[in-house]
Length: 368
Figure 1 (cartoon, rainbow, N blue to C red):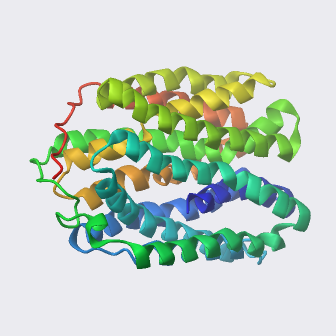
Figure 2 (cartoon, rainbow, N blue to C red):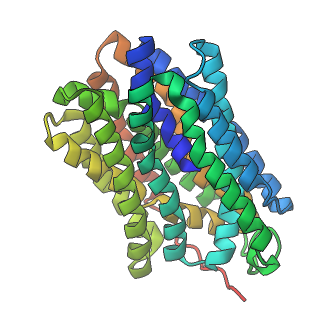
């Protein structure tokens, strides 16, 4: 599924090169995929708190693949925006229900949730490897080929639904299997604001790091695609590392220190020239993704009576809401330079650190 959210960023350099989009227009494509997803994802989460909706998993996979497959067919900018918006809607429908099912299957394990998140991160990492050779060879009109993974994913989801056991859906109701602790809404709000800060940094980097690296290294679209792959692959490493660190220390401490370390890493991405830039991209990615699955389980524990809603916010917004900032970054880049437009990103991990500094570590739920 997440290969299609990553595909939006992987397509941006080709929209710029083939259709001559400005930075602001390219950012609008990212916004179209992100805005609808951000708005409706908590709604899907609230629905999953009331009803089990496993049928959303194959349906949303098909929708995401269809949107990306059609995004390059028409040269019309509004139709392109519509197609990527459909893909964003598919992503929004998928995440809360999948996170609810994964939480029940993981039985509260941070490490297991880390492995679940790893699957999404690998999907992101595969996006440039899938998109770049297809579109480089056939142009944007070759995007229908990108529907193939969605067809396979839909078939696998349907197969899994037929074989699933009722107990795997969570015996304790839609929220997942243990008695709910009292909700800590104040901590959930602070965590959610930190998630927004992380999302702004990650989504803006995903949208513009291919163009930024191509400009700073002189390597063209190939260097840009390589940088995007490093950004996504570093996320896969960070996600697994986060689960392991949380098993040794508490989650809040790991999240807080990750944000602190990410400040320097993002500064390196913006300011360091040449090949060393790839190392900074990898460090920034790992720093942004160490807290990824931990924030999902923290949100579920802070809002334990509404696990779907918590998942829709912490998991969904983490990979979508930052797209709202991309048009502003694109407009500043058109008026000044892309490097200047990316400078404010250094501040957001610092704000995330401040927001998580006094968060409590919630008690782990009991699992029967």
